[in-house]
Image (cartoon, rainbow, N blue to C red; front, top):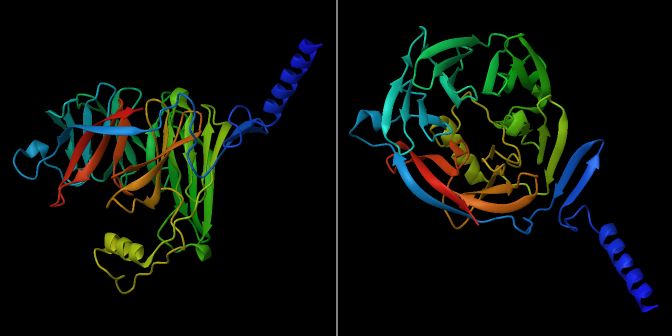
Length: 378
């Protein structure tokens, strides 16, 4: 009789556990399936999960850049990418060249130059080391992509004349081009998040935003931020709400990630800093008009590391550290696991690669350099 009662008690306890939990994460994280899509609802604060490291230590390994001295180590305005071996490809958008450095920061060679001829670019704004092991350069105003071998030999170009403005183009393992196609008409601004098949000269619209002119004359255009994950999955979001979406390689929605948050109010000090950043002055010049929203966008960047961690750069500043902003960190499943502070601000270029964080920083005199930090999680 005692054994029967004990068995019945255990069954009741197990039933209570199953009823009162959402999958396995109690009441802190809710994971549901809605219309065939996995939906993750995260709370405002990070959740501690067994066996999941949540703390980050950065150890500086080297830096690239000099105020004066060797010309090959001097930059003007730069962004970069890193290949799987750790070689660093630096695009100088002002000097119009590419400089290649090895994994220790030693200069190797220079690629291309400014101009209109084959292998030359006039308005380079983006660089990617593609899955096909090529250097891809986005020549924005010329509306073309240019391709080089990793040793710097010019290969070919691809015209983007089907699109008025194309932003943040990246190429997946199948050669599809993904990015923001922006256009405008008499009604307003249209932002389309697309996947472009250059061989067939066709594209599919993954998502879109339409903003009537009557409702938009501000400074924060809500484009899509995105990254390519493993197996050509795409994670993306628009900063008008805290929602991230994951598509499979066919463009089908398979997961949504939500997080509760408190909006960050734009202060008068913030407005002055933004105006100075845009115009170089403390006031808006005559004839110009800017309309500020009440709050900052939800986020300003979306990035992932080799472990699939998702980093969302927010506009929340760290009060005790000048120049530091908070990043929300999600694990590869989309669970909110950490809130970290980094000395990275909006529009500052950075990259997670090879268990490292690479950042474009500035000296006190305003000269750019690249710093490489080893990223250690515990």
